[in-house]
Image (cartoon, rainbow, N blue to C red; front, top):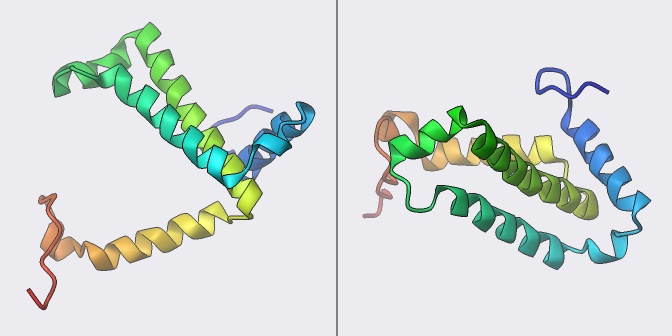
Length: 125
């Protein structure tokens, strides 16, 4: 299969990861605790690639073929573990992501957050 963002679904990727895990009989290791820890570990490995760099240096890594592959690998590891966690917990990732964006729209209204990274103050404050 030719995998591309424009044509590949989350379901396709979840199946790809499920087959990979099943073929190796790793299901016994893929529990929520281990998978959540693996996501955190891979996220730390991604952060390490940017450690000590200035923002412009970090952005420039996309133009360094060797380092860019390392970044893609770490992002992929994170996503693969997320797919596995979705498989284990029967999470409909598309539904969960869309629901979270809706919650974030309420938490961070565009008219109060546009161009500002700070959380808006709650009405009681």
